Image 1 (cartoon, rainbow, N blue to C red):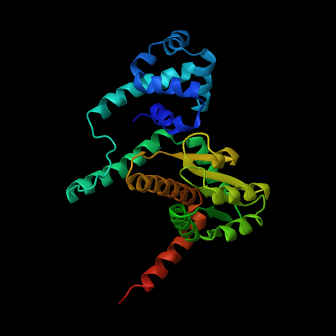
Image 2 (spheres, rainbow, N blue to C red):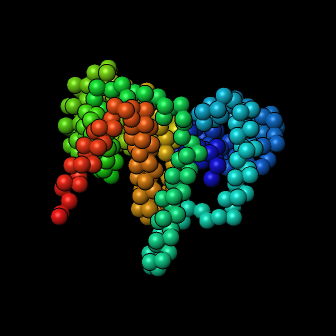
Image 3 (cartoon, rainbow, N blue to C red):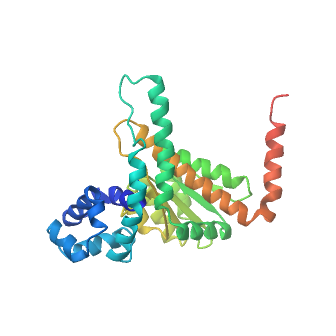
Length: 285
């Protein structure tokens, strides 16, 4: 699904009823929206122009004109996608072949859709912050901790002081000792995990630069962070939805790690060589 409509679907549950009315109309009638001036659109929906402009701002557009241009560009992509598969849930009793295809497609689609909504400016800010950081802490609970731990492992390979704790009490205690030269990264697809919120809030109060990796839109964690990175994943009933969001977040971690490594390659090359050498020596001979 094209970027504008992905963003709208991600924020549906977190906007006002009047904004939701506009959002649903746009999702159902993208072709007509691309040809309508704001006054005519407001009349058709039965809402105010101000509500439409407010929704456009929530979606990170300067105004309705920019949003309409984006929708127009998206329509061609939508027609192509109509010919392809959509997100598909795994159903009880599915064949193994169907499960393999659905999970693989959903994971791939979550990465593709994340690429549509991710901000290159925000990624660049995050990379610069990590490059300059004395210390990086990754906060996540449950499945999100696995992503945080993966990030810690990656950045440790290039000699960054990177930490991640599975215990939320250790997370918040460590966050309290961060300083302005440090970076804290909060990982939570919903953006509403309380322990992660408490830790990133403490990190911000301690002066650290804060980065969030959440679903698109307004949520408590991204709202308080300095740098906001968004991912997209399907909202489907079986755990394949959570699996896809994990894949999308891991992909963002890989992007950050690769960009930091590229930017500091001459400095970190020896550390990468050291880690590769140590891994080779641990293999069974």
